[in-house]
Length: 121
Image (cartoon, rainbow, N blue to C red):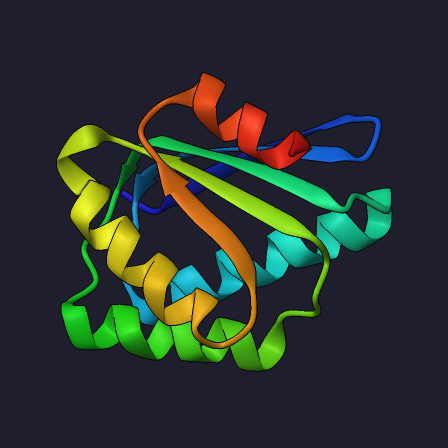
């Protein structure tokens, strides 16, 4: 199953609700670029990605490459919080580390409330 995504805007917050499975690197890149496009369109500086129903299938090396791609192609929009399923937090935190090391303000969480609080700090 591919990545399904819906967007909601609340002031300068873009809420992204994703589900399904990231079946390929190309699909994950398209997902990310779609989020960037929506953030620009809505002029949002904070992004909350609810990925609790999204299954990560990328390998460690693909995750590394994806983080590098994102850092190279994503503008410095603001802060991005990713909330994932607890079973996938290790993958999300690895992606977070690689991405943060490249200058983006992102953080992975398993709690929606903690993620929302981090975005307003």
